[in-house]
Length: 201
Image (cartoon, rainbow, N blue to C red; front, side, top):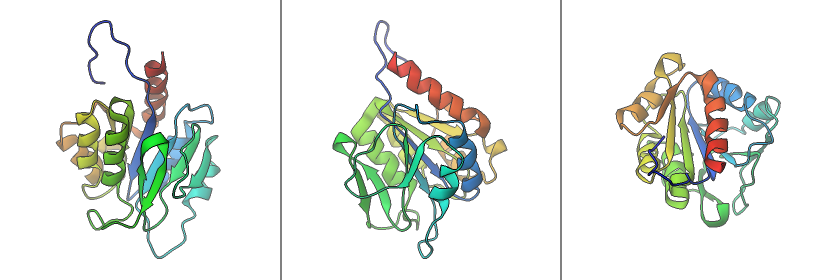
């Protein structure tokens, strides 16, 4: 966690953004299983998906968590206690007033949705109130976005590569030097809850 000057109150977390790729369905099931409807912030999720197939991931996650789970819709307002999943072939971004935007902009790392655009939007809009989480996956998506979140005072969590089914994404995030917490998957939900509660006190 970034150090706070003496006598200051850390800003409340405003949003948690999560990225996953290969092995991510299992990772997300574990993550959301440790969170519930009492989470006082929205959870935004990018899982690399096949753009040519209808995703059933929202239904899978909905059965594993007390959070409300839905595919994100363009223009809606992100609400606490709700998981918003980026739909296939659309980047997910968050802007002023926690308004969600779905974008058909160019692929990033040959991917759409990609983590970097989401994380950058979190950094821009929430600064120190943003939390980015990088889970299992191949490639480097999420690393530059995590660096952006950290550069604006936000908090970055990476799954311990030793516990990841695929190490590429968490290792790339670690390589930026921007990661605050490196944790086994099973410990990440408790740290998210702790960050949210700590920064709300």
